[in-house]
Image (cartoon, rainbow, N blue to C red; front, top):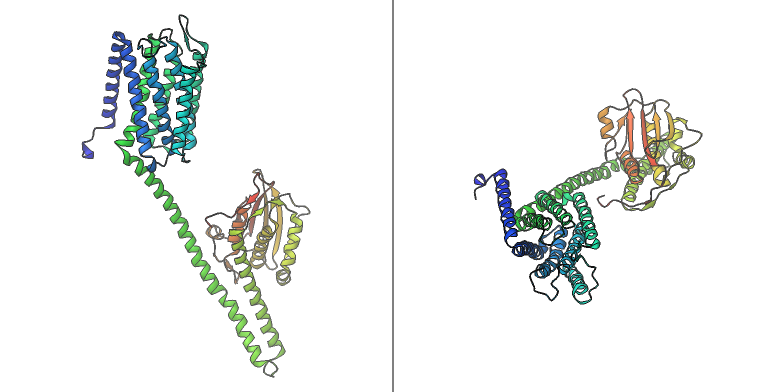
Length: 516
């Protein structure tokens, strides 16, 4: 049918309401003429719908990505079997030797317990595929045991005693079944995003009508009474909504479910593409770093080394010149070593699993100063440190790397001499913030945004970095459960900070993320 010639949603809804109202009125009229015929029609309609749900779910299980529908389909077959026996056992049908009203009422309660527990368990199989034969066997066994308890062993509690009517067990069971169905509705609501919206709304409405019918079935005195009849009408509407939710959508509109799955897969693929593009850009930048940043220092080593080799022991090489060449070689070697160390840290961050432990931050900072003794001797910074450090947890070798990167930048880009202040303080969010404050030229807002991206180069005051340090700081902080950042204004210095948890979380093992 041409899309433009399809009836509107309001027209379809009005037609469904009109048909439903006519059907209910007709059945109400039938109930007044022949209640057994009315009861049989309602029960057989429910049985046909339940069997249809089973057939749709069973034959489409290979294409389902929502396995709760498969579980529901198998469960409804068990419910249908109990409902058939209930209809045949109804008072006046004279099919079984027992012809009282207690037998069909027992069978009814048995079926409601199976249905309510099935609805409660279904959301658990949303993304977990059950073995269909195991589920089918389990429901078949439960159905057989219930039938045996009613017909053979006669241990199922009485539900209707003439002439007093419903027993306390029957009324309590109806309330219990209603509570379980309400709980199942809450579980479906929590998982509503996993269902096609139309299916979810129809399924929810079916459960609501089913709860209403159960409550009515706790009120009647006669199995032919008005409350009993009204409860069966609500039951009819409940199964009609189940038909609309599962059978019609599954057969008449199957592509809606397929396209929904394709859309979700497309969104996931798009996200993966963005991540892969970012990774490829990082790999390109990494190749540039290895090719360019290592090539420069290596040339600075090779050139002076060849000059020393050619002129060693000759009068052409003055002692001061030789000392300068050795200084260049040593400085270039330190640059190469710094780049290699950063690359090794990046590799470790991707692969290594560590555990959060209480940190002695004073000892960590002392170790950092030992590692940076050459930089301290070169820049002569004024270092200000607190007398005590707040308690935090982390992994000491990685925390050292964060301090080394922050202090290295403060020494290079700070004032003359650089004035560097270290500190730490607890935060309201359960983390501890540590910082390095310098008296350098400061950073523009644009520089602050780009600064922690991999391979972003900070070039101020003639100093050049290789663009790895601050991205390493951010990755370490995030791996340890914190964050890293900078606060700065041009001409007023910068405060580089990172945060760590104040106490170890319940799961203190930090594993490398799979996408890195």
